[in-house]
Amino acid sequence: MTFDQIKYFMAVVEYGNFSKAAEYLYISQSSLSKQIKSLEDELKNRLFIRNGIRIELTSAGQLFLEFAKDTIDAYRDFLNQASYNGGHCTLRVGTLPLLLEYSFMDIISHFQMQYEHVLLSLIEDTQSGLMKMLDNRLIDAAIARSDFLSPKNYRIVPSHQDVLCVVCSRNHHLAEKEELSLGDLMNESMILLGEDSSIYRLIREACLQYGFKPNIVFTSNRHTHLLGMIQQESEMISILPNKMIEHNLDSGIAIIEMKEKIYTTTSLILDKRNNENPYLNEFSNWWRTKAAYKSFEDIVERITV
Image 1 (cartoon, one colour):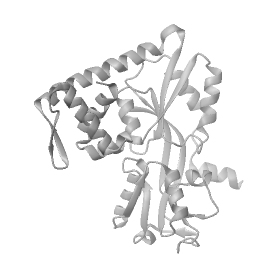
Image 2 (cartoon, one colour):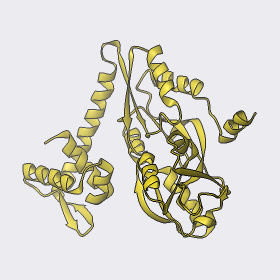
Image 3 (cartoon, one colour):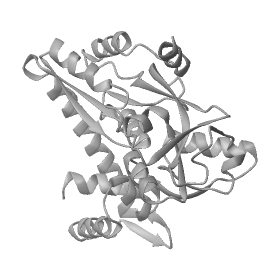
Image 4 (tube, helix red, strand yellow):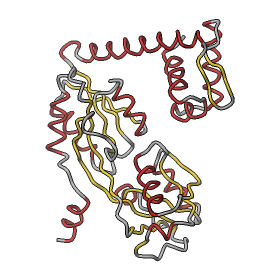
């Protein structure tokens, strides 16, 4: 039995089917099935009953679930204790793939130079993956979008507000437009960030509020994949934060502002329950000072002055 197998088991339990669990784990469904089968063979018990798409735990699966939870808790406690061993400290910071786009890498680098005895360990994941790790205290903080988070549960340090824009190929029939309404996108094929992202939810809710269900034909957890597809496929459009488009701008891509402004905020997010890491407040205060909150309007004003 490996720790990865325990994580795979917990993902299947969490998502209720193998397909979604495999997508979350970034492995193929067949690989996930093989790992679970290997675990079942070792334990000499079936852990899941497969009823079509959905799965249920067997009685042995219920017992193993308790063992898996205890094992993950013990692993988390070990990481916390090991973090402070020998006078050194490790800060585990989860992040979305946006550090370069929002110039957060400079802030992290300067913190590391200032606090040489603190090792910053960066872990990249999706929005939902980061929040689950934060809730389970497998990371100390997350650099993620805070659009739908409650300050009752988290300490949120807003860092950057961005506005969503339409992006399409220069060959697309909308490419010459200076501004688009959501209604103009009603019949367009959209490729968006993954379903568990705040961006996906913001766009879907805005379209539904406008009166139509968006025609989403493809999703990816990386904005660079979407921009690459836009370059190759002139019939599709995407909606992404302006900064993420500009940083990866190509001459074959057009950016179009939206009449209905949809904003997203990137923040440093901390679990209010986590006071175990002595340097977490140091990092939070450093972030608050160096990554001073910038609204989209502030940025536009500075550029135009």
